[in-house]
Length: 159
Image (spheres, rainbow, N blue to C red):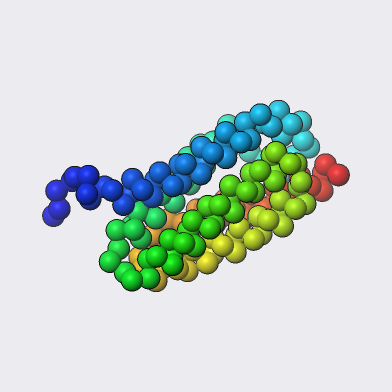
């Protein structure tokens, strides 16, 4: 069994930093627009606002650990898988800008469908390297599908 040291943790710290960094940047960019979100008509099943922060912290943690597993892998395929991971993080970040800052709800919904495709692609790429890394992304996919439901109904309810 390997001793716990920085070298063993480094891939996971990189994975977590990339995920948490995306989350922090998204929060920073959108925090001034949360009052407008609170005023929207929301669909059934909309969770209270505080739930989003908790869920995203968990999801970014799982995403970071998953990426860390891929980074730590000896696979020659990891560079392309991590590129897909980085792209989907960027697409994720842009969704928050389109939805919260620009309040472009229909475009945000379409963008979210693109994000979901990137997530599926990432899961597929991660599964070629590390099955557990791929499975750790499933809650993110499910939450994104739920977010698509919320996003579409917010668009329809707030025309």
